[in-house]
Length: 398
Ligand SMILES: Cc1ncc(COP(=O)(O)O)c(C=O)c1O
Image (cartoon, rainbow, N blue to C red; front, side, top):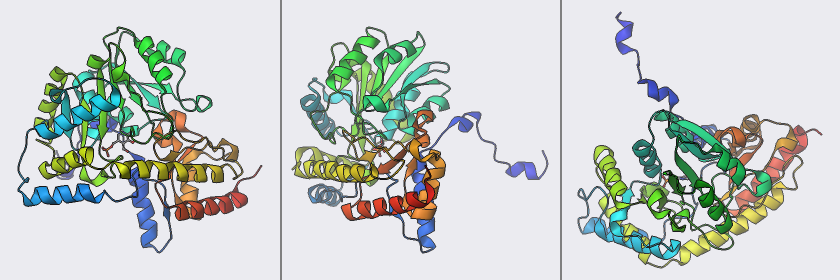
């Protein structure tokens, strides 16, 4: 090999199959514009604009002062695992115990580990599309076959169960569900979940149920497939602290699954992170056991903002938007503008000073949509609407 050859970056082949989450890229592009003196309204990143409630911050400070600064058990401290088991048992109506809980740094590692632990090369995984981009990225990374189930706007972004049934084959190993859903704000109702459970039947297939937005449902109750008869031992429930308690930067989430699989997830933890931060876990106990009023306030606030923003979007020529049923995103159909999603998102950033994401960054069936996070102040949301409306007046032709 020649001299230049020694510095050539030669990556493992699987790296070419790894995707990404565009939100972080758009955020850095928007920040670069700001450094050039531009005023940008940030509606791209999926995180609450609220601060972590003070009782949780105080619990972490106390834990630091009390010396919770060492390695802990790889699956999490027993006190937190028990607290999570009690919380999940109460909210999902299914009895789970502490040895069925694995605490990890964020919700994301549960996606990573579920796919690493269960999917072999050539195995099929059904996942929502448009959906959180990490699902498809990880399925492809491990050499699995990514099988999209299209979420349909006319069904309020649920999917067609007959279509779903037709995608299940002998090679299906894992099915990913997400409710409330990113990016559409769609919610699986109890009847949807029952139909999905019936379609899966008694096949030996696991379900990864991503319930990270479970505390942000605008009407009615959150339901989990884990509570369906026969599904407790075939479900990996993902939830965490990021969205419910405005703790995105703390990096803490969890998976709930049968104990023998939980032991395998622990082994993946030993091989990657060793454990989740110790003082953070002590704050997690306070988050789940302490005052919950901030969670409800935040949810009410997101619903109010979503109503205002969606109403505003529907007044803009070429935009048509359904009211989300949960989470904190608006996902307007922009096909009436005759712009492609990515070009429109870029134009809004460059020409209108509004950062949002192209629907197509959530998969092929996201083309024709944009995603706006409403986790920003009413004032900024109103300003963003004005800017988009002004821009559309000049650039959308009928
Ligand atoms: C659907 C979905 N699942 C998982 C996550 C990951 O959450 P965390 O930040 O806790 O890793 C997100 C974050 O945006 C999400 O939208």
